Length: 119
Image (cartoon, rainbow, N blue to C red; front, top):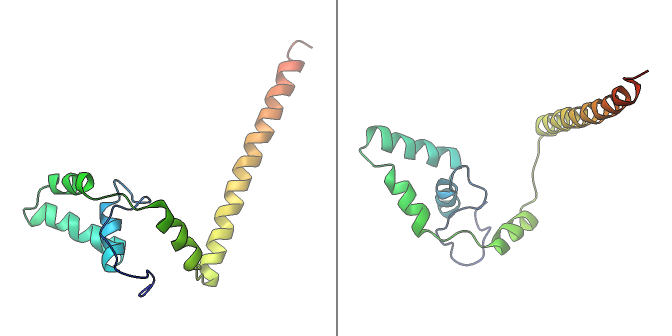
């Protein structure tokens, strides 16, 4: 991931963050794992005396990540998956398709029940 942006990286809020994208933006800015940044932030709030208001102030002050950076990041950084990741993704996709099929068949059953109710 190093050297992935050309030029200087700027601090911003991420569009794909969990709450307001502050921790993910900081993680991208300093090329750190986002989970580590979130953990440090939580520990500082709980034990370090930092106020939760700092998070919301940062959310107001920091600019949102430009859309072009999000698109260029998807194009430049191909996903490197291991066979375990692929297997997990495949299983998740199978579950989603199964749920969609179940929903469709339930709709068809509902229509059958409506028309055969009076018979």
